[in-house]
Every structure is written in C-alpha cells, then in structure tokens.
Image (cartoon, rainbow, N blue to C red; front, side):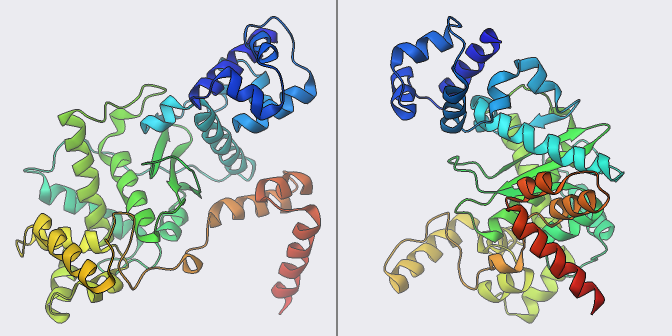
Length: 370
C-alpha cells in the first residue's frame, strides 16, 4: 500500500505542477514528511491522507488504489483527450470516477448504451456535401428536421448519449469525449465561465469527432493537437457542428427573411454570433476574418471595450433554460426508486443532504397526484 500511495501522491502533485514544499504548506505538514510519503518510506496517517486528497482534488480511494486498478474502473472506454486531460492525473481521475458512476447507473437500471454511427473523414475539402448529409441524418435521428434546435443537450440525451456539464477550471478546455464498444459514448462539456452558445457548439463538435474520428479514441495516448492532420480533423468537427446546429436549407431561407441580420439570425437559431459569421463566409457573403474585424471595431465604438473571444453578443441564451445533467439526475432517481442505490448514495451523487433529497422526493410524489 505504501508504494501505491507514494506513486499516486507524486503523480497527482506533479500533475498540478506544485512542489513538495508547496504541498506541505497547504496541508500543514513538514516537507520532510511529504518526501517520506512520496518515497514510500512511511505509511501516511489516515488524517494526513484525507488532507492530501482534499488539496490534490482527488478522493481517498484515488490515493489508495494502484494505478492499474484506477484505470480498470472504466473497462474499455477510450478517450480522444485534450492535453489538460492527459497531463493532469488528478483531473483525469475525476473524469474516470464520474464516467464510472454514470455507466454503473445505466447498468443498474438496465438502460442500453448509445453511440452515434461512425464514418471516417479527415478533411473538409471535397467532403462538404458528405459532412452536411451526415449532419442532416443526425438531425433526422433527433427528430428535428430543418427546424432550429431548442436544446441540443436534451435532444441528444434522449438518444442515450452520456453527457456531463461541469465547471472545470482548466484554461482553454471546452470539453472531451470517450467511446466504448460495449458502453457507448460520453461527452464532457465545461461550463466554467463559458457561454451556453459555446457549450452547445462543444457538444456538437465532440459528436462530430465521435462520428468521423473514432480511430483516435485511445487510452491514454494524447492527441498531437499541433499537427496539420489534426488541425484538419478539428475543422471537420467544426464544420459538422455548424451544420448540425443550423440546417443549410433553413439558414438560407432565414437569411433572406431576416435580411442577413446577424443578431436576429443568432437568436433564431440559438447559436453564437461566430457560428453565423462562419456560415456567411461559407455562402461567400464576406470573409470571416474581415467580418470579425469590422464587428470588433463597431463593438468597441459602441460599448467602449473590446469584444473578447469568451463573450457573446446579446441576446444571449440563458442558463436557466438549459438545466444541467438532466439524464444523469434521472438515472439517479430511477436507481433510487428501484432500490439499486441508497438514499445516502443518491444524495452524495446529487450533491444534496439526505434531508433535502427527501423533501424533493415528497414534492415529486405530491405533484404526481395533481
């Protein structure tokens, strides 16, 4: 056990890029104590282990389990991971635990797994029609045809796709996806200081990767994000996302009806202004770079400050209209009702006290009688 703890302490600390001295100061121990733990010379006191787990952002089990045991919790799930995922073991372990729980809930109530059908495509050029057709087929699978999508999170969850939207303070991280032959597909979407419009695009983008780039789902091999081939695949996922969110036929009709008004179009299709501008570029109306430059200039003239990449033009989509993790909560509710999990476990998964969970359950029973 000392060896497993020593290895885990070291890799989680290094993943957070903090020194032994810094960790010692955070938990109120001497640096000599931390070194003795990381070298496997001393078995840590249980109180110290709890403190270390808390400050490293992992659970007590994550510190105690051998690495191969932690990895095995996901069976054959493979990731197409962002570098933050592969370079930060504490972050990766958190995702492993969440996905293991989600999959266990599905299994407990006998829900079949889901993953979109796959077809390889490595570049947009000469494949525009094909990517558009795949996007249109997926829209048909969702039962929405050419109409604007009211809530893509909800629509895709109804198919059975595992989605978790969580606040993750990782700079430049928008989301990731995973795939298993036996347990389906999973998408994680970052919500930390990220607009709903961007979250929706991230979901559509990751679905694109699941469809077109299934060969990239490897565990734990990182993706070479700076290669030309990889950039081309990112453009495929972006192109698919744009056409999943906005049907080409509906877009051309709406452009004519709304006189190509940027704000009206973004509000109608419930997407970001950048998505609309890129579609203008596709139609040959104006170059995307020129439109962005002109928009930024006008915005600064009107508002007195710069329109940054993490900002969205009004009218913005509101968080209250896109409830978080509805399918995940539904699974917890069903597992509890079927007595597959305890009230204590359900409250823990939902981040509630048992008392508040019981109040919610009583309210649901009352509503069902109305």
